[in-house]
Image (cartoon, rainbow, N blue to C red; front, side, top):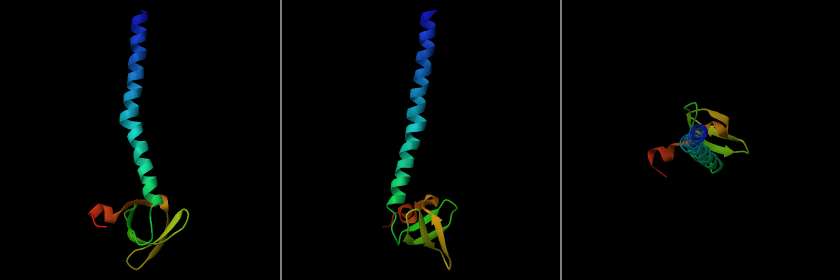
Length: 92
């Protein structure tokens, strides 16, 4: 009986370890890269927001950015920026 209980505990620990390495750790790495990306934004970068708006950064404040689209200007939270379009098309 003691061996079967130990085997169950070992399987549970193994499942937690696999879950950590395949689910939690990659997500934490992705969040860290996204945070670094948002901290390194500068005026003139062409970006895409999480809502799909394409624009060019005009100015950067602590938590917000001012972007210009065709004919309009928007002030957005930095957390709303999804990617740099220059990275997307391979041009820098």
